[in-house]
Image 1 (cartoon, rainbow over the protein chains, first blue to last red):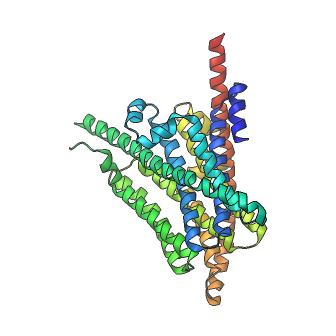
Image 2 (image 1 turned 120 degrees about the vertical axis):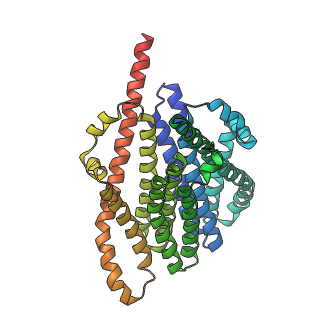
Image 3 (image 1 turned 90 degrees about the vertical axis):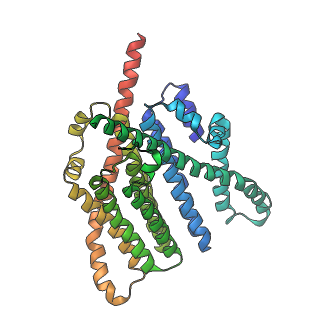
Length: 171
Length: 220
């Protein structure tokens, strides 16, 4: 349905900012509750900490990026794009690549959940799928981390520019 | 006065406090899963205390920054979420676990929606929307101490829920009444979160409708 809502927004001419935020918030909640349960399901303690880290990374990177995009949207956005990390540029260039990584990441977590409940014969299929999805999830979360840092940097650049501007006015 | 660079902003005192809060949250999370309740309590409480400090130093040292504002909000969301995540596991009763999941979702979504709505509509007639705001929200935001009291009471409630599983019997005679006292504060705070979520979504919908109408009339 997440694919469907974007499709229908464009098809019916019903794009809205409300829909955009609704989409983002639903993504964050679905990922968070699944990771919350995985932290309990995989009772091994170091793993639980990894899941908590992934929750925090997901929330904070998307939050930071959204804030940064909204605030700096008025300034020289094109220049910042050129300065962006090469990984981010590669990631955002092709929407299908972006979609593939997001899908693979979610699939990995969902498979981690399923593997605890599937009968033995089904595991012969699901475990290789899980192993295949793992590097996608890993890369996606590394990208989350880079995005978090880059968005924070954009905000810091803006802060510095604004402070310098108001200091310059005072002289 | 020398020109500030973005690195200087990263090094602002309130932002350094923010990074410390993140480290404390990590320590609290470790303490939760490795069952060191004292470590968890101290780390979590220190992080909440520093939440007051970073705003104070930002104003005092003239080091307010948008980065600091977002850092503060993100850290708040993460600390609350990891605690609620652990409570969902600690209180093994299934309906309760669903309540904790709901609270996590409500916390994330209401703050996200409010932030987005404030940033987007900040340029439009913000004052008019304030007048139309729900009376509960107006009461809540009027006095900063009221706001702070509710946030503090809410966090204290969850932290007490955690502690009550580990405290010796004699300490429970104090902590359980405190928990019961904090419960209505937490309840009200989360009801307010829900109202804020709806009101912010409405503000966005108002803006969407206005923009679409504007572009439709231009096309005629």
